Image (cartoon, rainbow, N blue to C red; front, side):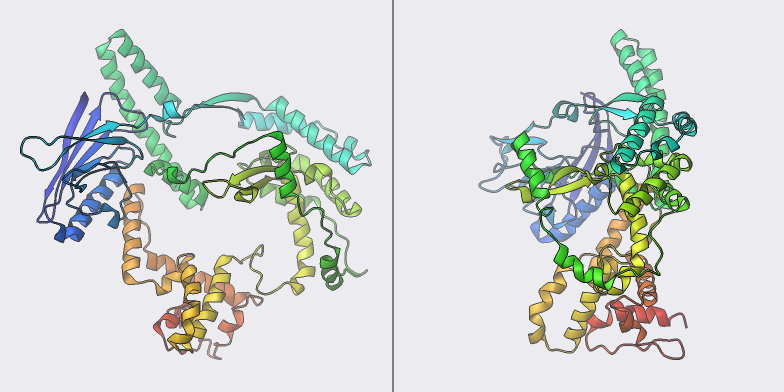
Length: 587
């Protein structure tokens, strides 16, 4: 039974015929807004490329305008393969439809949606009938709703917490001489104040809820359900007319939130919003649960992750200590209240708390009242050359690396450490950086400011392209695989040598994204040039970068740079020559 149905598109070309019908069944899982049925007929296989591209373009338009819809695609494809396009749908027909071949196919954007059964042909047709039995189970039945307890943070709760800290005499804690005792007492007191001032609420999260299904929308849906039970038709019509504008209003609010994340450069929130709007789920790579989780297994896992703690690294540390030895003239390692205050203000309030249960939101909001006591504890740690035991603990969350777990090494340890300890680590790093900078390897790219894996790849590619430019093909065959392994990673590394066809495919994807979010995005070439200039400028200013002298040696007294002579087009379009070309365009 359908509430409404509508013909959306009927397109007939020499290569294919496509019919698109929009259907809204009376009973439909909440995760689907409606059903869009696509019927396809491809007369001849020799026009496969044109026909498949036409079908793929129609499907992409449907996905952009109706991202929450269930889209089944069926018809006679005449052995043409939809996999040759960017459409990644699931094929459900597994039985022969004519002789020993599967010509009539059924795709959908939902995995395991149907099970196919063969039936006799109808009349004089040379194709067998196929019965598609629904196999999909709604999310509300397959996934139990989560019941969690969260802190209900609000401006009033933060104000009450600040007032509680204002009345606190922090000098009481400094009377304790034991570092562990001070840290445990301060952490316990802060947690006590949080429990006292910030209420806890129980939240029930359903797996099929969308972020725009707010409390106002749920109230309208409940009223409509009650009207349906009472048989009040007029009230149902009125509520239906109210629900549609309210959902549209909440979707617009959510869209503005995603746009604001673009403006604030919060890419994590941007991708979360894009996945929700597009209906993307990484269901194909869901790892299996960790087997045999017992107390003994957990203890063995802890020993596995701490297996390096018993090794003595004195011999490895001695050369570093000798080269970085601090003289008597050097200042003592101390931190000031302003340093601690600035680090607390940089904390991300949405991050999780560590074993001490002190969330970064509290340190950020109540920094004027907490930076004094923590400055005292930090300086006490530096004076005694030790750290509290509470800050050395980590809550380890094992995350599977592979779909099938066979050993402990298949679990990646994600450690939640104390936020206060991370703040102290950043302060110590700032103090120690000047002493260790002179002994650091110039090819060290990790954990250094203005360095990333892009710099490592650019350095390796520059060496490889320079070598390949001065050798024949026979000598370069052994290292081509190295170039291919980094080909598809960072933009500044591969976009210069990307083929026009590849750039066109990426630009097509960008245009589809523009339709989805309603914003105008730059092309891949524009993004590449901007990223190229920015990376080139950073390397030019960083005298310790391994590629710095490859750039600065080309500088002329006039301010321009000499163009590198390249025998191959591959080297001419690589990072260093392309960066020099862009640099010279300023003159």
